[in-house]
Image (tube, rainbow, N blue to C red; front, side):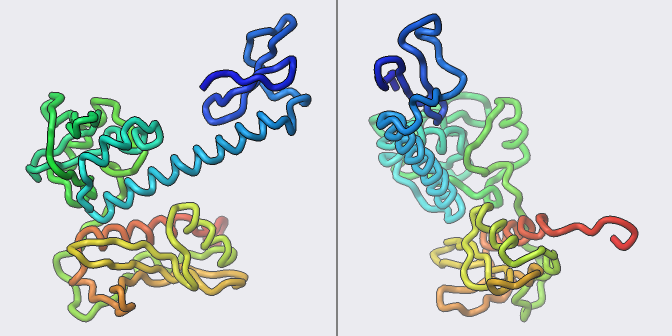
Amino acid sequence: MGWLAAGDRYEVTLVEGRVAARATSGSAAGRQLKSLPKALKGHPEVDRLGRLAEWLDRHAAACVAQVDSWMVSSLPVPTGLLARVWPDEAWRSALHDMAVVGDDPDEVGFLRDATDSGELQVVNLDGETVRLSPRTVTVPHPVLLPDLEDLREFAAELGIVQRVEQIHRAMWRRPETLDAKATEVRDFAGGAFRSRFALAARADSLGFRVSGAYATVRVREGGQTVEAAVWIGVPYDDGTETGSLTWHDQEGRALPLHTLGPVAWSEGMRMAAALYAGRAIEKGGNA
């Protein structure tokens, strides 16, 4: 965006999401200043730009969250919708280089452009830029991607960096043999935290929902919404430990582990592992 007048001596603008200023007179005229002058603190233009920067941050976070939701739920996304949002920098940043699948489920490509006509440009595994015009595309969860290791190697060669964690997302595959009656996983139980607040704060910072005594994540898979939940303790506990991981249907009924789909299993295990990784580690002779 351009520079806006802020009083008689300065102009302001947004640079990389922060309010920046430059002098309009004197020896420093025309040069961006390293910090905001005290004379501009509380200036209406500075406050307005500050509010705009906050809104842009929230908008960018919302775009990333929406693309992540499409991926976790394997929802078909109309290509026309991608074309409409592509000019928006925040949307483009969230979508750029995401692995997408069109009409052919075995043809995966990294999204590079979406035109006004609804045509997508993707780079396929042969390194060729191809044009696709499917009615919808999916942004597959990595546990569903064929030849994932090849995709990761190719992405490294291209220097691909995804805003939404997809091809390098931590994932778990459900064991083929499970107790038919088992409904919980305790692999990541017993992670000690100094307080329930600290554990809840970690869950929130990682993008998980905190509801009552649980951290949760929802996945829509196979037409069913499944919620994975990890016990994190009740509010105001002085100390707490991560509990078992369970999955529930929309009516709150515990689901047997062997009935879970690959995405629900992977996302539940990912949440439990991420929470457990922040546990307090004992040091010294008693560790």
